[in-house]
Length: 267
Image (tube, rainbow, N blue to C red):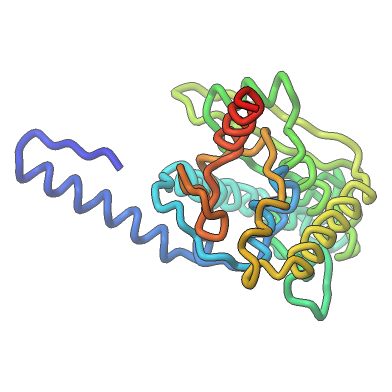
């Protein structure tokens, strides 16, 4: 958090309102969520997913919440505007707006997967997901596609809609830049149930391995769980720079890669 003021009193006010924002976000339903959600299943880093599945204590308290807060506000605005344009198709609302869907039901709590879908258009059979991003990120997604995390999320929500009796023809991710002018990039592809099923199978393998390793009893076994160079480490709740004890936090994928290179040179 960076705070400034034009005098000592104003600086104190800036610190107070900044801390209010941080504390309020930490107490929000989104921040308090413990169960894994569709937005996390496609995470490239298996170590991060393992921490999440085991509900491991989070250690990264330096994450800036403002982007997520702005994103939440944008989702609320879009929901309101589509609700105002709601029409009927076959006697039913055309738009399913911010409705919870069940991607997979299971008696095993960590295997159950539900989430809130941003928008489903029953007439066009499109499942939409809004992503409010920075300008550089929008350019990256325009050039390189949505990446595995967002692609998997899109198809998981497609599966959730199919389970609700509304199989989509396509899944859509709309990237909108946080910028002084409107910039929009849309990625879409035909809905493919197998992409969602493969992601769920991967998640199950990661869960089964974590349980077999008994990481709470054998913290040294955390080294058997890989990170991924594509991981956005600075946003990870378990990032702990310089950590040498993975049960206390992860130093980050890039740090580990540099350490491995250094060890290879020394050897």
